[in-house]
Image (cartoon, rainbow, N blue to C red; front, side, top):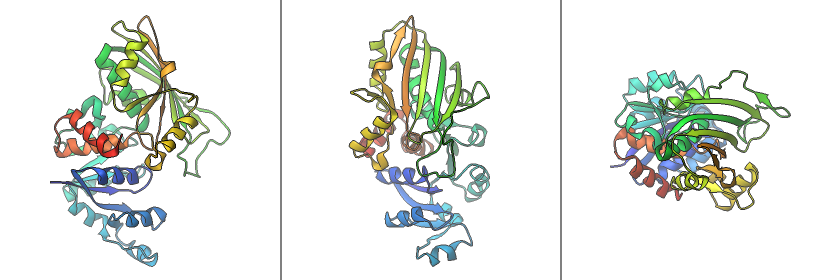
Length: 333
């Protein structure tokens, strides 16, 4: 039996979650919700997703020639799990709506850990989400850090992590944000990203700092780890290469622009790069201290985790690696 998935908020993340869920053999997208009749709503209908709207907004969509299947409340009645991809300050109050409908609900990393009580990353803590009613898939940066930290912690043990995050200023279609010609430091140090990693990997000692830079392509992480077990750079590369959601890169790729060009050349949907991209040449270990650079595609790396989280919450797959494999195979990763 397929899990009936509904997506509340069909924007940057929501439309990607819907498309990914639609590819899964054990999932069915039975509705997506939009607040206004824009091009994304039109595309949802063209892809065959039933479109639901806020109560009272039906005339706006009908005037635009868009067929509406009902209200958001109607959508929640037909789903097994709702993936909330609405903006900050809207997502948290939606919990009362989901409680009233009696539907399992998951949120994105922009919300507080306390909203769901469980913060999720498939490689790190899949079992924590098994059968739960609420979960939060952590942010793109936390997802990227959690993947690489959990992989190396299992292989060698991680004593301490220090990471500097160079964050993109906005997503490519977002014309309302900057900076345009500046580098903006996050003056609160350590930054919030380290504590967010600890919601997934509570035993990890981690500090992070962050800056915002004028690019829309990707985030870049400068990662330093103090490892417990003696190892070589080659040992670390071998461990990283075994994680299907980590891609080792080189062959002339010297920037995030070239990483995104790789995604285009691979014919990825929307040029998405779901994996952590780690420059192979940057991986260096000396006296158990590791340095590396990784690029994180902020629009897409969390999509795989959303799919695995749906399986864990609905208990349609009890094993993390089997779910990861199912997700990867469906996405042709």
